[in-house]
Length: 411
Image (cartoon, rainbow, N blue to C red; front, side, top):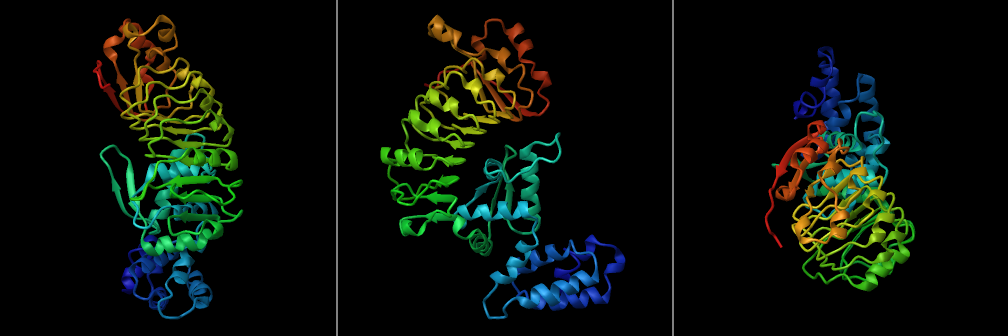
């Protein structure tokens, strides 16, 4: 057990002369305080791995660990020591995970986008994107055992879970700033200090949301369609929102007044029954991420989309009813993800409508695109040679895969 604590996680990471009996003796004494819980052993070991001297190890044992209560079953205070040793930016990121239910499979790239929307991710290297920095944050936390069951999907995206004890720790350190509201919750307990909420929309929110920055939703068995009153509440009372996640609520309309959420950076409308989006959505000048995946009835994106100058992710996977991309999309040079580009079916639309549609040349300046780009309806390109040259696909060095579709009818 001593070697499990010391040699694997700590001693192998330092010079050979540190594997002396003194380190092993201190490690043994520390191990006795870990209650035999593997998670606690791993997290304490990761904390020790960044301590270089015998003096630091002994100080950890005699000062920090000695202050922890020895009462039976009190594991959390010992576990919290590892949290206390995190740098500030990782503390914010970990505490934010309190918003996920226990045993929930977390989508890592989505979590990173939420961290970015909250301003937790700071750019220190100009050549490194915020997403790359955020993934480094995640890896740092994972190495310290704050996440587990990490898997990589076929498309390169990752998933993970949190141990129940880690979830309890996240709840402890988040305090009153974050919460999950379900059918058993008393909304009156949520006060003005609260900044981040996961909510079940069958509950009409009675708390004050003026300073709320995150509103997430997880659909449950007692799901009811989101009401107009809930929309009114969100837009009227939650003006500081940075993250709004409304996936799979059977929404058929987004109100024009959504533009009042001027601080919004992340908006997820995936898996809804939307046919169009309001033009006012283009007034959300701080918007960074717009998720529209599997909005099967969505026919078009709003005109003047080029106003969304901070947009980095526009995802519309499975939006097979889209007829075209709006002219001006090529001006969104910050885009890092554009999952699908739809070539206009010019023959079936009026001249005015066709004039409002983007052609392949608008891809020309989008050289920051990453991941997958699917180009649909290539069979309708009239000047293929010129448009492909203008699309400048060879300069999109960050793209991992490119899908080409001559055009089929999905509607």
